[in-house]
Length: 168
Image (cartoon, rainbow, N blue to C red):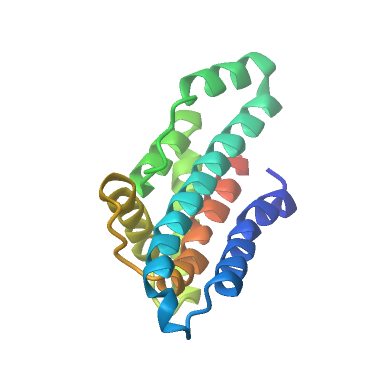
């Protein structure tokens, strides 16, 4: 997937956070409950964006190989859940080739060096867990601010997945 297209999709989270802060400013104590609900909705939206990007990346790559392959990938992964873990991402890449899975792991290790030894998955996995909790029990476990901070690291998982799928 083109980097600019991936970035545009992920930038939608920035837009959502800005709008949430405009509608229900953090400094106003009257917004505490609604901001809790908004944090849950933000998590649902973020994870849906991640799911859609993973599908789109795989389909576009498969389409570059052959249209039948693209159709197969699209059909096989039609019902991906929005709880796509790191091991799921590794498994998807392994279906294409072992080199792609290795490239993904290398990309994440490289990113970890630049992130003061914080592995992107340390921030990605909690987003999935918090989304799951909110979606199934309407219990917000985080704030808009914390979810957004995690997203800034977590999106590196998608950039790494995209780079890895393109490697030979």
